[in-house]
Image 1 (tube, helix red, strand yellow):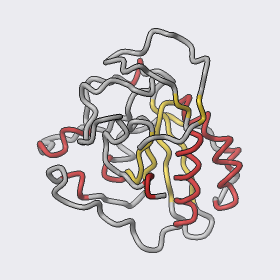
Image 2 (image 1 turned 120 degrees about the vertical axis):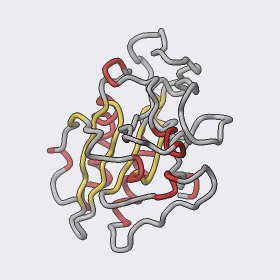
Image 3 (image 1 turned 135 degrees about the horizontal axis):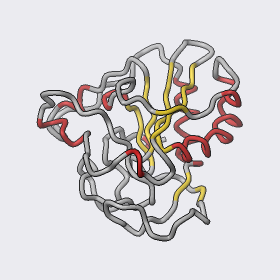
Length: 204
């Protein structure tokens, strides 16, 4: 999964390789996730907190999450995206990964995202121009606090369920809905209701 290895917020924008989402538009129609701003936030992490993207008006509905807990180690991953995307990914995740989880995936439905419950440094993967994220409880990627390209990502903790991570990562990367957003900027594209969803591999 070498092409699924990027943990940088702002990855996946065609032709753009620096982190952050400000002024970048929405190449896949959906808006990027937004992390909670921190009081006295250092300048190195300001890129995580875009004020251009408002939760109430985002395509696909407000940000939502679903929680997946390993049945072997207790490792907990969280999927974060707009409500429609989280719901749309559930059948594929259920089909591929439920045997690795503590509870039946069919019983898990999207819940409203709480920005105070998950932080940007917990993200282990981004998809679809950072409009979808997968986080790991207990992970602290200190590289997000440093100047860009100055520090490598913190390794994932030892003892986590890497089988569940690999399954979720591969499944989300393949099944995440992609729609050509034609690089609209700071507003939803004008073509209205989604009529075509391409189940293609997400560019990270």
